[in-house]
Length: 247
Image (cartoon, rainbow, N blue to C red):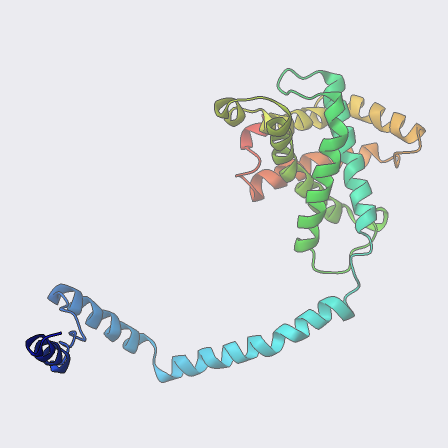
């Protein structure tokens, strides 16, 4: 390297690097917006409000372990879940058997699908039912009608989704056909089974099930509670059960 080149390299090294601008230019309108936001925050979050929120946060933090301890220790586990699962399966199975026997043109229901529909629906209903009822639950035989209706409402709510999922997994259908599925009509068919002359068909299915040792001899109660559960599902979960299901 020549002396001239060496001098040029040393000169370049000695020159300080240009410093970057620490802040970028902010548009005046955006700056005004930021100032307005800061002013609004300062006016809303007074020291008293901040203190109140801190106290509330501290209280929630101390209450959380106590609530968890109450759920895991003081409150008994959901020991009756097996009984409720069997009850839900029994009722849903009767609903679907009655629909299949009636041969409703409104729904596509294969007898081979009944057991899978009943099992999956009862499982989903059991999960959401337990999430809603944060208390010790008796066995269904000892439960009052209101509690049974709450559980059957969950069964009604989940059944259309389970039916739709089953069709999607087992049939080659287009998206349009999937959207037009008669899953909601299945609830309407249950409504018909317990509010028209078809209720006798449900009682007959219950008697046959009871004769096989699978039923509980509670057909009259099912016929009474099912319409209440369907109405409750329509009122509480309009996105799951269309009001048209009751017509």
